[in-house]
Length: 403
Image (cartoon, rainbow, N blue to C red; front, side, top):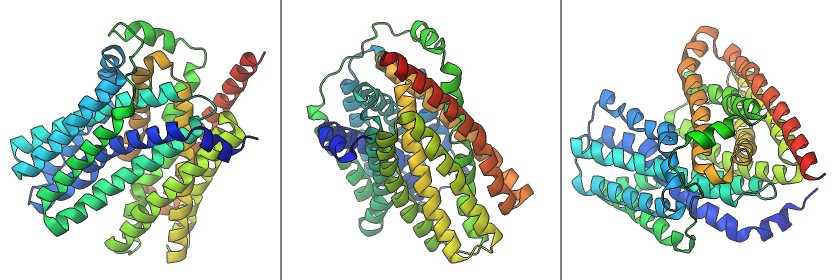
């Protein structure tokens, strides 16, 4: 087995780069998903209009459409810096205007979302290009931890600033953080995207013709399906069990995100120690089994001890699963077309998450929470089977490399 401490020391410069980039990536996403709904409602914007944030959020799902531009035009560093400038400018514009819900606000929010999604494409491509089987677990541990930390800063830190000093100060602070992130990319070298054509079709056809492509697509769609189905109903379950909003926020968001970060770090170390194929299956089993904690909590009266145990265990296992899952997706991409291919795989993951969310409420209402939580475990089985197939493919590829 590899020594995780030695691996970490070896890759410190890379991990610092990844941490910087993924904090920059998580910040605008947190602003759109966590801060803007609060901002709009605090200014009396109708709920129906606030729902349009979901429409501009499609930028993260559809980013694969312009990912070939990022792969073929200029350098990844150029795209990151240009996107961060747009992120900083759009947040400053929202703060200066103070026109919540106005056409100007929606234009700035749309620019923020599209700049953020474009930045995601370039940053993910850099991460894929810099990753290899020896460091991919650590890369994704740091990636998840710093991305989640940025969401906490955006959703919690900036809203706290708004509470003390007003919304103008909150958005200007967010803009300043984006500028700091931009300055911190000064040491990012100008990596040029190797592909010379903007058309994704030739390379996409070649990539889709890989013998293991069916397995890659299956893992992308199914590995997190049961976990995603459960996640959409966790907070409604806490509410229906009689817990207050403040306690729910503490248990599911503060403790939950903290445990996810710890789980992601543990998952990255597990990938180093066990190898990607075995880790993908083993943490997949943990991820699936963790859903049982909510089923048990629901069946035993949703007592506080059982509820907190479920929150801790589910988030730890989910963080481990996400680290292994993203490591697998990264290793499945060709480095020369990393932006396009990784954007496509994460779009499939997003589609799976959206479908799970759409049907979760209907199923929970018709089955009841106990049966629903057990059912999410059953939904996780196909993803585990896909992970086993991926393990065999990775083992076979490794044997060919070592011949």
